[in-house]
Image (cartoon, rainbow, N blue to C red; front, side, top):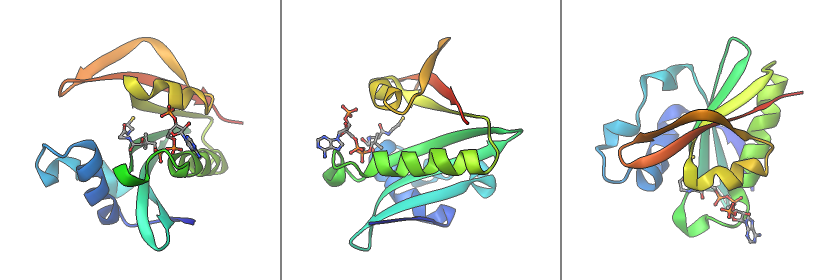
Length: 136
Ligand SMILES: CC(C)(COP(=O)(O)OP(=O)(O)OC[C@H]1O[C@@H](n2cnc3c(N)ncnc32)[C@H](O)[C@@H]1OP(=O)(O)O)[C@@H](O)C(=O)NCCC(=O)NCCS
């Protein structure tokens, strides 16, 4: 198992398959990707989980977190998120946050993130909340 930085293009297939399969492939290609750091977790040389990090003004946002459905629940996402939280702190960010699918808030709470009151919203029929935590 290895975690490494990958080019933005390498994240798009997993994002599309896992997060927005009913949208056009272009939907998961963000213009902000240019400014992001993209991370991939490989198990037996196969890309199974991706996550993108955007650091600006001392704050880090992670976006488009996706693990291949057949590989979910094996701990890969947790390893990748732990790695990226550490990396964000090393890059000097003092806070990390994400727009979390509400269904996943319990997962993020295990990493110390908490929902920001009053900042829930819906996108394409999916409920989201803003979750954040300070970084050391
Ligand atoms: C969210 C996501 C990226 C997490 O990736 P993952 O590789 O499945 O993450 P993990 O395997 O570390 O953890 C997933 C669950 O399995 C559990 N788990 C991890 N290792 C485990 C193990 N060895 N045995 C049993 N359960 C385990 C975790 O506790 C977690 O439980 P929870 O979902 O009830 O909180 C993945 O589920 C996913 O792609 N989901 C669909 C897209 C999505 O919702 N993305 C996030 C948008 S905010």
